[in-house]
Amino acid sequence: MIAKLNLAGFKTDYVVDIQEIDEQHRSFFEMLDKIGNVVSDMYKPLSEEEADALADVIDELREYALIHFRTEESYMKEVDYPGLSKQKKEHNRFITDVIRMEAEIVNGTAMPAIKIRNFMHDWYRDHILALDKPFSEFYNKNKN
Image (cartoon, rainbow, N blue to C red; front, side, top):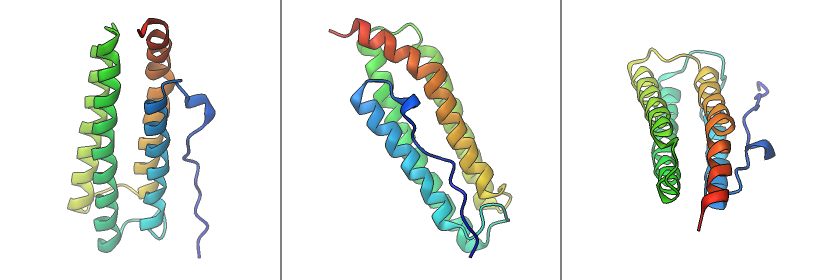
């Protein structure tokens, strides 16, 4: 059996001090682990069965991200956050990229699972640190 490398995970650096958003971020990172559970080797091309299972996990992650992004955006609207349009643009870009990856999986042209997982992990990490943290500071200063 091949040892599975798991670098994904929620870290305390990602806490934004908005409980619902922190819980959703934590859940997303936990869901990323499912990718490693549906493929035998994260670094090799996918079998047909693995591709089907991976497509299901990616679909679940995409749906979860959509719910999460709506939640974040509602918090932003609540305090008239000036960075809302940038956040929406980044959220839309992520969903577009994930839909493209789903299509590649279905068409049999997907990159190895590790690259898909790393893309999602790194995007979320970078998004939280660069955009969500500044929002949370604004939110926590301006909420009613």
